[in-house]
Length: 378
Ligand code: MG
Image (cartoon, rainbow, N blue to C red):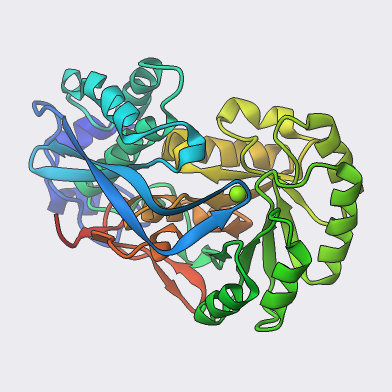
């Protein structure tokens, strides 16, 4: 017999639910949440993340990242969300707040109607992907809290299969790169930013400290496909596992040529945004880097993974500089991917949440409901 989640939560107490409803993965009785008469209330505020180190990638350098923190209140429960706006994405605190001011969640009285709610949010404007993500994340956190389960459990994902996460080393002088690499000794894999004109020096400096596997992210910093291929061959000899966005996102033919000739997987990041992009990337890239701030959140990110797998493509999950809120949300999906780069919360000094942890280099999920975070301060 099929039960709608809404009616089954509404009508059944926690104790009887645990015995009558066959949720094999349940380890605790479901919260006796009441769905039906409440109104969802969205609130939001700007917040500035302070970076521990100046962060330099091909193209720019910065010490802070603007974010907007959201909360959706419903029937005494609060779901947390976050939008992060590194400058290259084209969103700002102002544009996110403008977008969120148009979002009317009070028209919905059942937070489990994710399709209806998120299709409505997506239809408000063409762009604003980070703004959409902060609503999606808060909504997912809320529904997990309403049934008192972590999202990975609701999705049937084994939390034991989380990957290692890389820690990112930005472009800098050999002295600073050496220091940052030494500081990152608890990570079992590093991601090195290239494309700043000192690529071999960057890799050689990191290699002078550690022999852990390395990922490379060029952030569109190489311009010539032949030089790119030569560098990819050299990187292959240095124990690099894949190369992210080596050429400009507009150079589609050159990228397809490079992917066809490359001994290493080539992963799309800046070129890749939404679900509709995935199929067109088959043959151009070996895989995709999914980030919640590009995908408009968790629901579309999950679909991207499904489509990429159907196309036999590699999947990476990454993040921006973010608090533990958005990073913990992305981590819920991490057991499904090949590679994770979920270090955004570790790059900042003023996180206001506690959530996913890195233990022995591995993304480690907790048992907290929803996206798995606790608020530390306001
Ligand atoms: Mg990247």
